[in-house]
Image 1 (cartoon, rainbow, N blue to C red):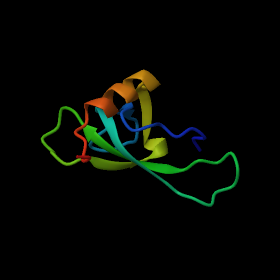
Image 2: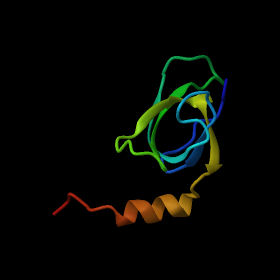
Image 3: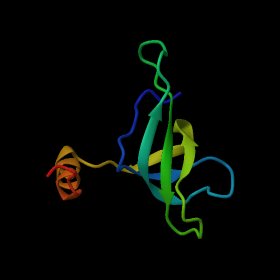
Image 4: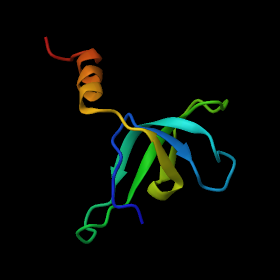
Length: 88
């Protein structure tokens, strides 16, 4: 089981057997399962895939994807700064 949770914005490759195997995409949302023992991490990633006609992101278990590129904290700050603000 994977003990490291990837952040949203990470680029991943699907490694599970199925129709999406070897496709790359970007994690848009992370859903973790609380209440696991210390050192255990289990989560689901909502991944926006590239190279497919499916427009909606798809959920994958944490062990069905591998990281290709993980955003640095500077990239995350830049992304957060580029999002529209709801404050007036």
